[in-house]
Length: 442
Image (cartoon, rainbow, N blue to C red):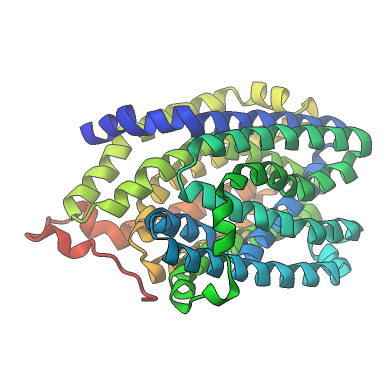
């Protein structure tokens, strides 16, 4: 526990204060004002439709970039002093992203009507998908530039870009919602991320020498292979879960009511706000810490230290959210969203189990346990959809939040089965033997 507290005091807290906490707070405020505007001008039904588009766009963004940019950040950090290898990495990532983005744009633009039927069912917003196809290349360029800044540890620039981008996106969103109601909100979902490139471009302009490194002849199979593990792991989650959420939301809309689907989307928005802080800590401390340790004892100590220090604070926060749920709904949304109070208990309980399980599951990524990650993610996706349909039929929209708790409880059980020996068993004499990297693709 002392190691975790010392690390938070000396490192993580500093980084969070200088970059992530500011960015997270800006995102929360931006999300609050956006949610409030949607609640006032559009209502629960519109929020459900916007949720579907956000989920679809999230999947498309990851497919268009192949989910490789977390790997790009990792390898740029390792190769930033090796110009020759850096050129190979950047060229490979750029052209992979270029080819994938171009293909995705053509598919979406010329199949807008078909995609609209899948995402919006009987509502016709086909033109939104054509706008999305035109804006997507700018999003991909932005993420590519962002990964370069991140890899070179340009934290101050990333902070500035994040804050300006969030503020600009909020202003555009509020104006479009005010002027065009639901259509404006849908347009803002697909163009706001692309406009970030205008800001990121200024930051990347100081790295002009990197542009000269991007050459088609620099594409190397070895980097395609290295990035493929990151790509597959990222795409499984980034594609499967949003699609499942769209299907669940559409199922609620068709069998319970579109308004109730909007309540479920609103509940997910509130959940995402407080989970931002947890996700930040996962990125700043747990992932790099798990990557560097090589003994069962250290792994066990880190997990239980997190449980003893962070989890109680998170649990207290969830209790406060539950008892303040009526106030939170009135502040973030409108009285029309009052019925969503019944969703809080199971959603918060599910989020608690999610935190308990995910902190251990980060070991899959840290040690590149490829097949463990794939199998558990597929299990989680399937069980989330199956339990949601089952409980929605029994309890209406509340069933979706019950399924959230049940599915993560089952996922947690699987995680404990996989890591049970390391967490609760007798420590081996050679502690390093069970925590070696397990890159199944190399």
